[in-house]
Length: 308
Image (tube, rainbow, N blue to C red; front, side, top):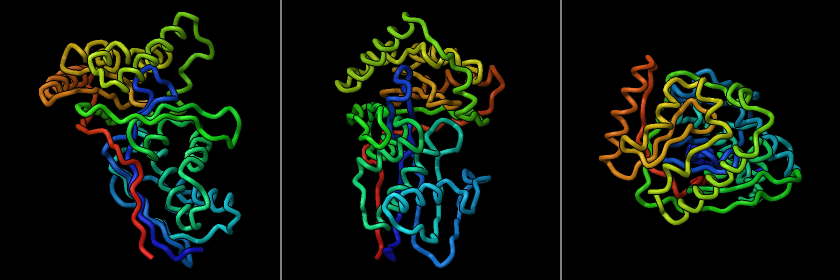
């Protein structure tokens, strides 16, 4: 086992972007940091208010995921010193668990002597998380279009797109948590053919528009019938923002992942100011405490520093 100290910086992510349910995600310049090294005794240090309530023993997600990697590499699971922090709030739809999984896998892979490629780590992360839409952007940066593999352990088919240069994200973060499980439980088991066709068309147009930088098409392309209509009741103000954000400075709007964070995409400072004002009227009208962050897409993915 290497005595290396590794520091991994992982971008947050926003998934689905409307119709791209479980297949489309984008990395954001909002970061988690995972530091890791072998130790005589496992010690987990959690820094910052966003990490409050996270377990600091071997039940911690980062330690558990690192253990999986060592086992798959055929190595004994070591005692570890882990220090972690997050700028992204947890359970808000910004891929916090995906960031932790990616940070754990990348860090442990380096300590193990890098037995796995980044593509293999992507497959492992997808298996652990259950879908690739958040872990892909956190690992590779940019916009990732991907499919969960049909066979366990198979490579994840994906394409990486560079975000359009003028694209900006305003994330609207309500001050309440919403578990992915609860958000998934409101979804139906069966969809009508018109709704399926609607989403196939819109997600196809969305990917093509992002690939060509056609921000003028995002407002229409980001509409969805698979998950957002069913989740709107869980997030006060969401439906109004989805319906009207493009009339108030946004080029597109969506629920971020499973929510409750709402994503408004803009292409200028003027547009962002207008949509911020609109969002404030909507959220205040519902009596919802919230905060906003103006973020750029991240194009780097994980960034690693190694000290021998």
